Length: 70
Image (cartoon, rainbow, N blue to C red; front, side, top):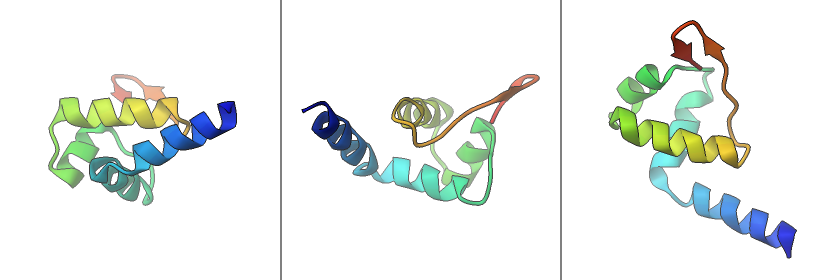
């Protein structure tokens, strides 16, 4: 049951077109939130929200360098 729940959560995350766009933008390499905002046309808060969920589910990782988070 736990595994099915995890699979369910991941598929739900991928069902959102905005998250798929973010993942597509990240295929070319790491980017800051600001760069992803420019690449997708989404607002900063929206990008951050989607990235947080993608991070929680293990789709993306992040690192901080100075003031920037990649």
